[in-house]
Image 1 (cartoon, rainbow, N blue to C red):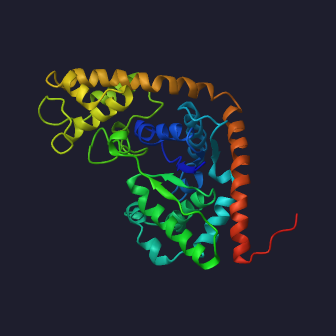
Image 2 (spheres, rainbow, N blue to C red; image 1 turned 60 degrees about the vertical axis):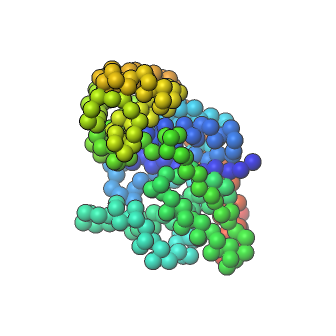
Image 3 (cartoon, rainbow, N blue to C red; image 1 turned 180 degrees about the vertical axis):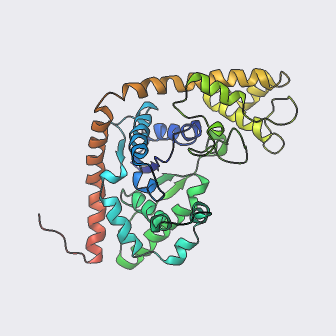
Length: 330
């Protein structure tokens, strides 16, 4: 059975875009592959975080993984910092990474732009991501377009190390969901930008937003000129994005939605879209509340970390041996 690894940063509230574009795919993957799903808290601290918020969001994302349908008895769900092999392998990989490779990372340029100070962790972030992936002999990594460059670096590092030391790492392949499968849900306020966990609160629907908040955000979502509900990414990017959300939440095709609302105007379409989104998130929110009982998610994460650690340690030890590091006697 192939292995799949993916991680989500606790750097903001999970959005409908995260669910439709990633987490829903995780739920499907768990029945097709051996899956490791990680809350990557070490990545989050490459930029300043409020400790209380980081703590809360880390547990919340884990709860939302489970509430969305990931079964911790099937898939391994854990927190990155609970498995120390991630940090250790990151250092070992850094010693095999070239400065020029990291300087070419476009996401570092974007995230560091306008900052007075930038941490070394933000610069080496892609190497930690490589460690996350390579630790689990990963076959396939679900990634968005914005992470594709980082996965290419991961592949380059694996191939470089394998060539120098012999077989050490499996070279992973990317899985990029097609756009029509929810791979890229756009902002409600700017359809040229991806719906993000942070930024303008009006631009995204959080998975834990109340029905009234969801309805208000969708009512206020930008639309295009005219009144016709029609899928056309070039001429009507805003309404096309809303149609994709409707389609993914309801299961209706874009053609069916266009036929139903075509000339009726945006008001009726938005009102019904709000109902569809609220119905989609209602069972997730209900299950999330059950997971807020003291100790429930913590126990799931503890068991997940134990399983992840067993797999990760095998790969880490394999690389340590190739490097000539003396193993500690037990």
